[in-house]
Amino acid sequence: MEVMLHITTLHYLVLGAALFLLGVIGVLTRRNVVIVLMSIELILNAVNLNLVAFSRLWGGQHGQIFAIFVITDAAAEAAVGLGILIAFFRNKETINIDEVNLLKW
Amino acid sequence: MAPIATPFFFYLLSAMMLVGGILVITQKNAVHSALALIVTLLAQAAIYLMLYAPFVAAVQIVLYAGGIMVLFLFVIMLVNIDRSLKEKQFNSQWWVGIIAATGLGGLFVAVYTKGKNIFPERVLSVAEADNTQKVASLLYGQYMFAFEIASLLLLVAIIGAVVMAKKKI
Image 1 (cartoon, rainbow over the protein chains, first blue to last red):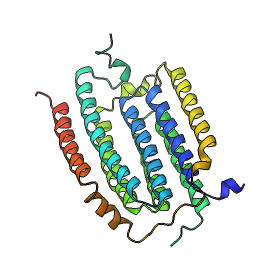
Image 2 (image 1 turned 90 degrees about the vertical axis):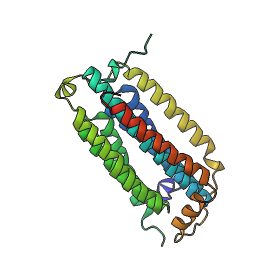
Image 3 (image 1 turned 135 degrees about the vertical axis):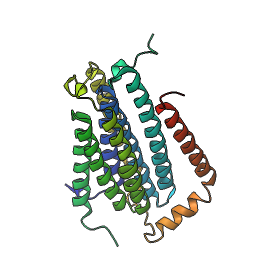
Image 4 (image 1 turned 120 degrees about the vertical axis):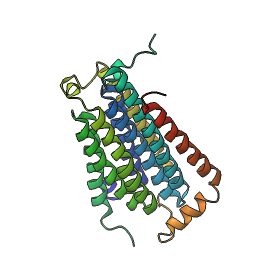
């Protein structure tokens, strides 16, 4: 009970780990490309949570700066990924990720 | 001002985030997934506030829940086909997913049970009022070069997205 009532950095890390696992399961098992991209956003958010929690732990702002850069990367990744998705949909008329197999040998 | 009722709000927001995450990966309709993801992102912004990071919380709401999710919803509306709702939603690799998730989860549990004692018991006290000023002076001082590279990355991403989505190059 004592562990439950005093919120430490470890609590935030466990929350981040749970969110990361949800994202990994989504990436590996879903067939809809849009939902796979959203699962990648979940993973990036889990990392951000860890960065900000450690920033709080050490009392500095460097982790928050890194989290802002990760958010920038997520924006770039979402823009390019969704552009690729639109090109793929135009060519194949589907958004099933199992159909993306041109590079498979 | 110290946060009020930290355990209560932590568990409330964690529950919101985890339920939202589970809905993201289990919903059939991609629009419902996107709405669940927005709930997760907003709860996470509130958790950033609990961690004394108001600027990151504001960026999370404006950029993530505002910008990126609108982009997602646009694309879902563009490519949403009724056929994909009738198809099987999960591929046949669910056992790979289970193995990877249990492996990673076991790794997390092992690391956190073994390594939890290396964290300092008390978190350092931070100045609450000038967080945004400190972030700004770091961003435009020590991290100036990374900031410029990030702007270049965004430019490349814009051009890449336009080229990818163009009908004829």
